[in-house]
Image (cartoon, rainbow, N blue to C red):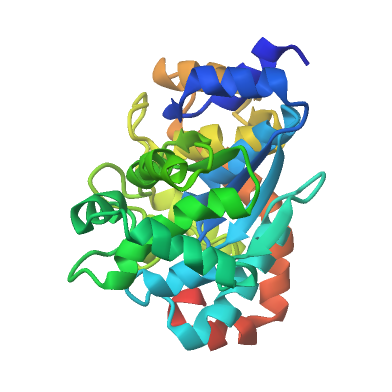
Length: 337
């Protein structure tokens, strides 16, 4: 694959890259660069995570090896969103979800943060970076990721550890949502102060709530998101009620799920329509689907039905697993069921 093709593949469906020139240089100079994406096991795995997951498919096509960090310690550092006694169960749940929810051709390498973050060398670097980081700078870095209601010291340690993860995972790129920007910029600024190189940071957009603009997609508000192991009935009901005005492209969660989840995973999509409205239509590129929807050549109900069928099929393995292992979800708490 040509350099420009690799670059465009990595860049598509992103909001920002720090920096694009460094990414081009990396793709040109290194045959198989390595990237990582981190997920803290704080709650149920839902569609909001998958806009970033879709980029991993692009990375793999571009020859970038990818690791998935299940950041179990971070889940406790973030105002105990996962209690210390629960992080082992939570991390196993997240790993199972990600392994089964995505139809991987080749699975990424899964790593638990606790496997290396408690080492003497790592913790020495945490203290070194903490000694040169002001409280104000750490709070700014953590502000959009951790809860920060009544900031705990652990929440200020969070961005320090996420920065060091780049070095200890031995990667060239970190992948994250745009809400991670302050932490990713912090990593680029502070890793060199410890003698480590700054990495390329790739940021993806956040999927809007199923309720539409103004409502955050959150596992704690069930009607705003779809868990990867939701029942077929729940998926159909949630999508049926989702925000999707005819011809409206901006902040449309149905279109975003096609763009950031379905197309990267499936590669193409077919919308079934009655013959009197033109019959079935297939798309190889998301942009063509968006154009027809914007021009009101596709009805919201037909688009919703197609999305429902795709998600039911894509997540069949993880759904079937947890239907047979409901006790595992119950042990995690009511919000996971």
